[in-house]
Length: 94
View 1 (tube, helix red, strand yellow):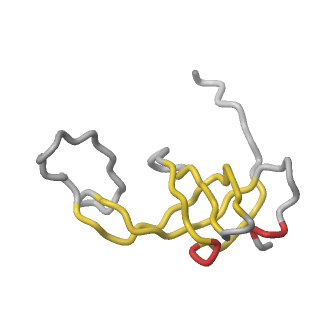
View 2: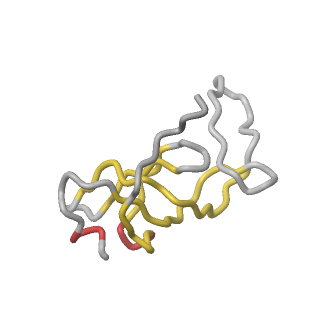
């Protein structure tokens, strides 16, 4: 399935790649920095699985929430693959 063909109102996810700051284990990091403060991560390519939140068909971009880090990323359709439906499950251990 292509992102362009996803029916509106359904939950989908995909694999994606982006360049972001990562830690020594290659996981994306997000920090609030003060002016002049050094960033603790290094820029690198990151691949993850993201839940599709918003599609911009005109500009061919998609906003995703990474299931591992819970961070949001906006990437080009060209940097996504393995698009598939989501089966939501309740976590009963909460």
